Length: 239
Image (cartoon, rainbow, N blue to C red; front, side, top):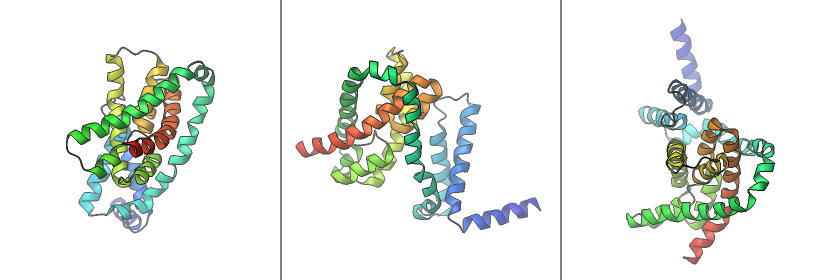
């Protein structure tokens, strides 16, 4: 009886847009469960696990992305409110932000330009196409901004979205080790660096480690989105 009920539920969901939403939530729950079982190790990233599970499911079932996104768009819609909600920890740490305004401003501009030019430069040396280079340029900012910038300068927004997710996962996984190797101990600097380099996914990881780091990462996430939207199109026009 239980198996029959589950089968009927699956048949119902598979015919509705809710399927995309359901499998997305289940994939992330599975990823988060494994992440907790691994002691919240950066290597066992819940977003990466969820992506792999979803890709495998879509491939095995022959489901195209458009069909899947009919339901997953509800999660996509929540990106905006989630980004706005990052203002709460920022407000709690506003005094610390004011104290470091000048160095953060300098770090933001240098970090934004470096993140874009190094990625494009390495890809150019490896023989990437022009569309790929343009799609790579905004890969260190949150997905909606990155896709808009890519479209503006002639890149492929869909490719940019994939690159943004990969950038975030790599930053969340390797960021802590890199900062430890560089002996950077100030949580403000650690959080800001992760936010500039790996946007929302890196920011989520920063919050797991320290609230101050998370606050500065969320500040970097927002400011880098603004800086990239201004600087990247300008740089590519000059080049």
